[in-house]
Length: 217
Image 1 (cartoon, rainbow, N blue to C red):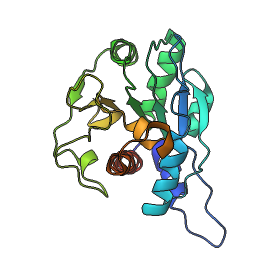
Image 2 (image 1 turned 30 degrees about the horizontal axis):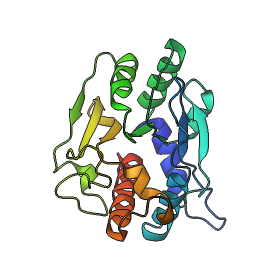
Image 3 (image 1 turned 120 degrees about the vertical axis):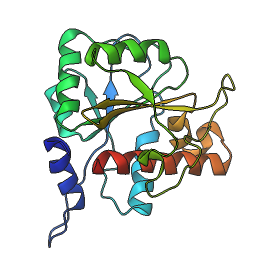
Image 4 (image 1 turned 180 degrees about the vertical axis):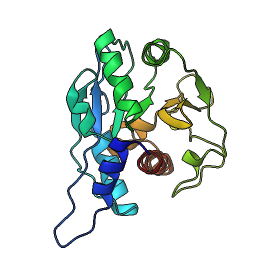
Protein backbone atom coordinates (compact mmCIF):
# COMPACT_ATOMS: atom_id res chain seq x y z
CA UNK A 1 0.00 0.00 0.00
CA UNK A 2 1.44 3.38 -0.99
CA UNK A 3 2.15 6.05 1.62
CA UNK A 4 -0.71 8.26 0.41
CA UNK A 5 -3.29 5.45 0.59
CA UNK A 6 -1.98 4.23 3.95
CA UNK A 7 -2.32 7.65 5.55
CA UNK A 8 -5.77 8.39 4.11
CA UNK A 9 -7.10 4.89 4.71
CA UNK A 10 -5.94 5.12 8.32
CA UNK A 11 -7.99 8.29 8.67
CA UNK A 12 -11.00 6.57 7.10
CA UNK A 13 -10.97 3.75 9.66
CA UNK A 14 -9.75 5.79 12.63
CA UNK A 15 -11.67 5.13 15.84
CA UNK A 16 -11.15 7.31 18.92
CA UNK A 17 -13.07 9.42 21.39
CA UNK A 18 -13.34 12.18 18.80
CA UNK A 19 -15.11 11.68 15.44
CA UNK A 20 -12.86 10.49 12.63
CA UNK A 21 -12.22 13.08 9.92
CA UNK A 22 -14.15 12.53 6.74
CA UNK A 23 -12.43 11.72 3.47
CA UNK A 24 -13.54 13.46 0.28
CA UNK A 25 -13.78 11.81 -3.08
CA UNK A 26 -12.20 13.89 -5.83
CA UNK A 27 -13.71 14.74 -9.21
CA UNK A 28 -11.02 15.40 -11.81
CA UNK A 29 -11.41 18.65 -13.75
CA UNK A 30 -9.51 17.94 -16.95
CA UNK A 31 -8.73 20.06 -20.00
CA UNK A 32 -9.64 19.51 -23.63
CA UNK A 33 -13.27 20.62 -23.67
CA UNK A 34 -14.87 17.42 -22.41
CA UNK A 35 -17.69 17.69 -19.88
CA UNK A 36 -15.75 16.65 -16.79
CA UNK A 37 -18.65 18.03 -14.72
CA UNK A 38 -21.22 15.49 -15.98
CA UNK A 39 -23.27 13.52 -13.42
CA UNK A 40 -23.08 16.05 -10.55
CA UNK A 41 -24.99 13.85 -8.08
CA UNK A 42 -22.94 10.70 -8.73
CA UNK A 43 -20.11 10.94 -6.21
CA UNK A 44 -22.28 12.37 -3.39
CA UNK A 45 -24.73 9.50 -3.84
CA UNK A 46 -21.94 6.93 -3.92
CA UNK A 47 -20.46 8.38 -0.72
CA UNK A 48 -23.87 8.22 1.01
CA UNK A 49 -24.35 4.62 -0.12
CA UNK A 50 -20.92 3.56 1.14
CA UNK A 51 -21.47 5.30 4.47
CA UNK A 52 -24.80 3.50 4.91
CA UNK A 53 -23.82 0.08 3.61
CA UNK A 54 -20.09 -0.23 4.34
CA UNK A 55 -19.81 1.98 7.42
CA UNK A 56 -17.28 4.33 5.80
CA UNK A 57 -16.85 7.95 6.82
CA UNK A 58 -16.87 9.73 3.46
CA UNK A 59 -17.77 13.36 2.93
CA UNK A 60 -20.96 13.50 0.87
CA UNK A 61 -19.72 16.61 -0.93
CA UNK A 62 -16.97 15.71 -3.37
CA UNK A 63 -14.01 17.95 -4.11
CA UNK A 64 -13.00 19.19 -7.57
CA UNK A 65 -9.30 18.95 -8.38
CA UNK A 66 -7.12 19.52 -11.43
CA UNK A 67 -4.56 17.02 -12.68
CA UNK A 68 -1.63 19.41 -12.25
CA UNK A 69 -2.57 20.63 -8.79
CA UNK A 70 -0.68 19.61 -5.63
CA UNK A 71 -4.10 19.37 -3.96
CA UNK A 72 -4.65 16.04 -5.72
CA UNK A 73 -2.47 14.42 -3.06
CA UNK A 74 -5.21 15.18 -0.52
CA UNK A 75 -7.42 12.57 -2.19
CA UNK A 76 -6.96 8.82 -2.11
CA UNK A 77 -9.61 8.36 -4.81
CA UNK A 78 -10.13 10.42 -7.98
CA UNK A 79 -13.04 9.92 -10.39
CA UNK A 80 -13.39 11.10 -13.99
CA UNK A 81 -16.36 11.03 -16.33
CA UNK A 82 -17.64 12.79 -19.43
CA UNK A 83 -18.50 12.34 -23.09
CA UNK A 84 -15.68 14.07 -24.93
CA UNK A 85 -12.09 15.19 -25.11
CA UNK A 86 -9.58 14.84 -22.29
CA UNK A 87 -6.07 16.25 -22.57
CA UNK A 88 -3.09 16.65 -20.24
CA UNK A 89 0.09 18.60 -20.71
CA UNK A 90 3.46 17.30 -19.60
CA UNK A 91 3.26 18.86 -16.13
CA UNK A 92 -0.22 17.49 -15.51
CA UNK A 93 0.78 14.03 -16.69
CA UNK A 94 3.85 14.06 -14.46
CA UNK A 95 1.76 15.12 -11.47
CA UNK A 96 -0.79 12.38 -12.11
CA UNK A 97 2.02 9.84 -12.38
CA UNK A 98 3.49 10.97 -9.07
CA UNK A 99 0.05 10.86 -7.44
CA UNK A 100 -0.68 7.32 -8.63
CA UNK A 101 2.79 6.04 -7.73
CA UNK A 102 2.35 7.53 -4.24
CA UNK A 103 -0.71 5.36 -3.65
CA UNK A 104 -3.52 7.32 -5.30
CA UNK A 105 -6.28 5.62 -7.28
CA UNK A 106 -8.05 6.89 -10.40
CA UNK A 107 -11.41 5.61 -11.62
CA UNK A 108 -12.36 6.66 -15.14
CA UNK A 109 -15.96 6.02 -16.18
CA UNK A 110 -16.66 6.45 -19.89
CA UNK A 111 -19.97 8.27 -20.10
CA UNK A 112 -20.00 7.50 -23.84
CA UNK A 113 -17.39 9.05 -26.13
CA UNK A 114 -14.30 9.26 -23.90
CA UNK A 115 -12.48 6.14 -25.07
CA UNK A 116 -10.46 7.75 -27.95
CA UNK A 117 -9.10 10.29 -25.45
CA UNK A 118 -8.66 8.17 -22.33
CA UNK A 119 -6.18 5.75 -23.87
CA UNK A 120 -3.65 8.29 -25.20
CA UNK A 121 -3.92 10.23 -21.93
CA UNK A 122 -3.01 7.15 -19.93
CA UNK A 123 -0.17 6.41 -22.34
CA UNK A 124 1.19 9.89 -21.72
CA UNK A 125 1.18 9.27 -17.97
CA UNK A 126 2.55 5.72 -18.09
CA UNK A 127 4.16 5.15 -21.50
CA UNK A 128 5.61 1.87 -20.25
CA UNK A 129 2.24 0.35 -19.25
CA UNK A 130 -0.74 -1.08 -21.10
CA UNK A 131 -4.41 -1.18 -20.15
CA UNK A 132 -5.47 -4.77 -19.60
CA UNK A 133 -8.94 -6.18 -19.19
CA UNK A 134 -9.36 -7.50 -15.67
CA UNK A 135 -10.70 -11.06 -15.40
CA UNK A 136 -14.01 -11.69 -13.70
CA UNK A 137 -12.25 -13.29 -10.74
CA UNK A 138 -10.27 -10.11 -10.02
CA UNK A 139 -10.74 -8.88 -6.42
CA UNK A 140 -12.33 -5.60 -7.57
CA UNK A 141 -15.44 -7.60 -8.51
CA UNK A 142 -15.45 -9.49 -5.23
CA UNK A 143 -15.29 -7.00 -2.42
CA UNK A 144 -18.41 -6.48 -0.28
CA UNK A 145 -20.55 -7.32 -3.31
CA UNK A 146 -20.10 -10.18 -5.73
CA UNK A 147 -20.09 -9.50 -9.47
CA UNK A 148 -19.27 -12.88 -10.94
CA UNK A 149 -19.74 -11.64 -14.52
CA UNK A 150 -17.76 -8.44 -14.12
CA UNK A 151 -19.21 -4.97 -14.53
CA UNK A 152 -22.99 -4.56 -14.64
CA UNK A 153 -24.45 -3.03 -17.80
CA UNK A 154 -26.24 0.15 -16.72
CA UNK A 155 -26.92 1.97 -20.02
CA UNK A 156 -27.09 0.34 -23.44
CA UNK A 157 -25.58 2.95 -25.79
CA UNK A 158 -24.20 0.77 -28.62
CA UNK A 159 -25.32 -2.44 -26.97
CA UNK A 160 -21.75 -3.61 -26.42
CA UNK A 161 -20.87 -5.61 -23.29
CA UNK A 162 -19.25 -3.67 -20.44
CA UNK A 163 -15.49 -3.93 -19.94
CA UNK A 164 -13.36 -3.21 -16.90
CA UNK A 165 -9.74 -2.33 -17.65
CA UNK A 166 -6.88 -1.87 -15.24
CA UNK A 167 -3.55 -0.09 -15.45
CA UNK A 168 -1.25 -2.14 -13.27
CA UNK A 169 1.97 -0.68 -11.90
CA UNK A 170 4.25 -2.82 -9.71
CA UNK A 171 1.45 -5.31 -9.18
CA UNK A 172 -1.14 -2.73 -8.13
CA UNK A 173 -4.12 -1.47 -10.11
CA UNK A 174 -3.67 2.31 -10.07
CA UNK A 175 -6.34 3.09 -12.69
CA UNK A 176 -9.66 1.32 -13.19
CA UNK A 177 -11.42 2.19 -16.43
CA UNK A 178 -15.09 1.21 -16.82
CA UNK A 179 -16.14 1.18 -20.48
CA UNK A 180 -19.56 0.65 -22.11
CA UNK A 181 -21.04 0.53 -18.64
CA UNK A 182 -22.00 4.01 -17.38
CA UNK A 183 -21.65 3.40 -13.66
CA UNK A 184 -21.74 7.15 -12.98
CA UNK A 185 -25.15 7.53 -14.59
CA UNK A 186 -26.37 4.74 -12.35
CA UNK A 187 -25.04 6.56 -9.28
CA UNK A 188 -26.99 9.71 -10.13
CA UNK A 189 -30.26 10.68 -8.47
CA UNK A 190 -32.87 8.12 -9.50
CA UNK A 191 -35.00 10.77 -11.22
CA UNK A 192 -32.21 11.90 -13.57
CA UNK A 193 -32.06 8.85 -15.84
CA UNK A 194 -35.00 6.87 -14.46
CA UNK A 195 -33.01 3.64 -14.60
CA UNK A 196 -34.69 0.51 -13.27
CA UNK A 197 -34.22 0.27 -9.52
CA UNK A 198 -32.07 -2.86 -9.83
CA UNK A 199 -29.67 -1.05 -12.22
CA UNK A 200 -29.36 1.86 -9.81
CA UNK A 201 -28.49 -0.51 -6.96
CA UNK A 202 -26.09 -2.56 -9.11
CA UNK A 203 -24.22 0.59 -10.10
CA UNK A 204 -23.89 1.76 -6.49
CA UNK A 205 -22.78 -1.69 -5.33
CA UNK A 206 -20.10 -1.89 -8.01
CA UNK A 207 -19.00 1.64 -7.14
CA UNK A 208 -18.73 0.59 -3.50
CA UNK A 209 -16.56 -2.35 -4.57
CA UNK A 210 -14.25 -0.02 -6.51
CA UNK A 211 -13.91 2.29 -3.51
CA UNK A 212 -13.33 -0.58 -1.09
CA UNK A 213 -10.70 -2.03 -3.40
CA UNK A 214 -9.03 1.37 -3.87
CA UNK A 215 -8.74 1.94 -0.11
CA UNK A 216 -7.43 -1.52 0.73
CA UNK A 217 -5.01 -2.41 -2.07
